[in-house]
Image (tube, rainbow, N blue to C red; front, side):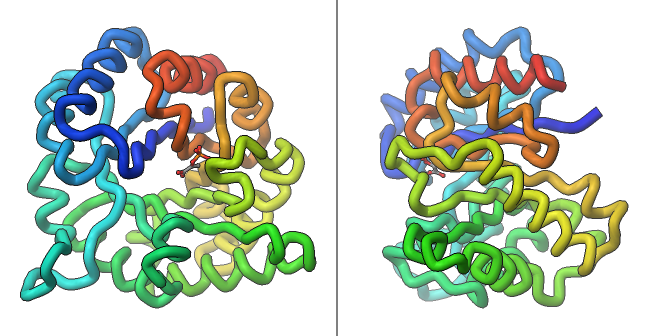
Length: 254
Ligand code: PEP
């Protein structure tokens, strides 16, 4: 039986008050979920409000980012230790918006993974090509560079705790999702990369989520694919009905 992991990335939406409302709705709508792994990643300032609401549920909590130092004079940053202490089990690392607007590199992604693992957080590591990279047939080169870069010096016992999210940049927030075939093909490629690094058994068990305009209408087709083990959901995770519907689709496919 394959696992299905659905994670909502609320991005820079939902301050504590609105986050509390959304968490309450999700709590009500997801009471009967038993098999799918579900988590939400609110902005830092809303984590505590959401934690309070979902504490006795199966909905997990994650952060959208963290800094690559243990502590120190890094004004405005938040460490892995703080993320863990605030009740998060997951942390998104290397989201394409961070790579694009905050100059995150494969190296900084790799360093952040190390700090996250030290705090027993589950890193959700994002990879994916831009439109121009896809159009010039560089998808596999880019994904390979990002995956190998992210996993540098990570031993398999630690790599097992990492969720990979394949998120083609051209599909994020654009309403254009990759077709199930396009996504599945890259997921299979990532699984092969992992098999080369950590062995076939490891690669068969690893979780690879798809992200990029996942909605209730396309969730079934995407999540039914052999190599797609879940979804990282942006826009649709801000709407309790839509997110719950995607989770329900995952639950049915397990
Ligand atoms: C994301 O933020 O990771 C994402 C996939 O966004 P969206 O679902 O809005 O494309």
